[in-house]
Length: 187
Image (cartoon, rainbow, N blue to C red):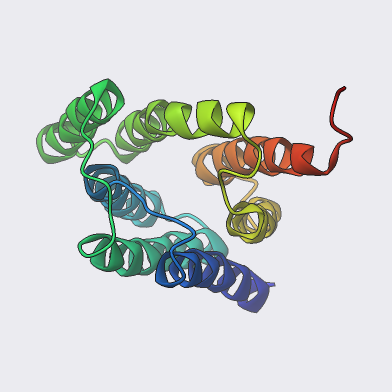
């Protein structure tokens, strides 16, 4: 199962990098910096919480995938920094401060997840408005990886379920919203 988590996570980010190379996805550079910070934050928390190896692998590969997307975004990105990026940045900085001051990885991970959700609201809104706006397979592959990570979580600790459950929720929502492109158009 570990190898499938790794494979699906890699496929997710490969899908995104392919879309960037072919001008089908132009992420905001500022949003990508925030998402990279959130990925690093979540990875530190997951390792400090001694989560299952599948969750650790998924988060470590998410950092690598975010580095790839961020690197490509330096050349092919929109330069927008709106309210969502501001709020997510404040939460991200807050979670790093919490990490440095308290070494409370569960609290840090929770703040990181909240920052991630707030940062994802504009993406949800865009896909509600236009189901073609996001690449279906980016979300689909990561949904599969996080579902397997959730199943592989250590049942003896709640913290093992927190990140995979959130990712299954968020990416599942994105998959469903993207699938709306296949519904018949209203007259």
